[in-house]
Image (cartoon, rainbow, N blue to C red; front, side):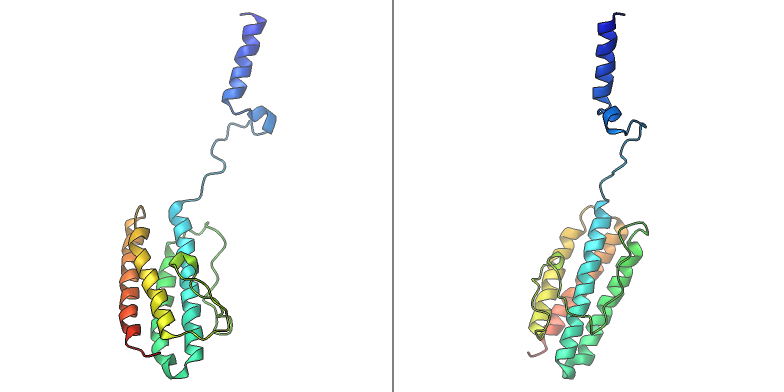
Length: 175
């Protein structure tokens, strides 16, 4: 083998290995930076959206004392959904989600993940606004079940059904 052939083979080997020699990652490790699991990314988004929906209900209850008891029932269902979603989140995924915000911290509104625009934190929350947020959230659930585990798909279907019932029940409340 000639010196030129030997150098060509070595250069080809470095090129195939992704020039790991130059980057200092020549340990043979591949896939050190795996992309995040799509289901985990979805779960994190769903958890954030549920936390914001809970905060929206808390703000609604604070702005309408007459309906606070009724709205608390809806909020508690969302708290249960949140707990179920958190159970499916892998322990090593992202920072631990924060607990449900207290009424004094409840200044958010459902995020774009559930399809509703955010609004000023100090504004009163009407039954119509809650109904719209629930409608958008429920409408997005079927698409979210694509490609997820059967357990998450079943949970999302149940959450979507509950949100759809909330739309009907909130329609009976007068603003």
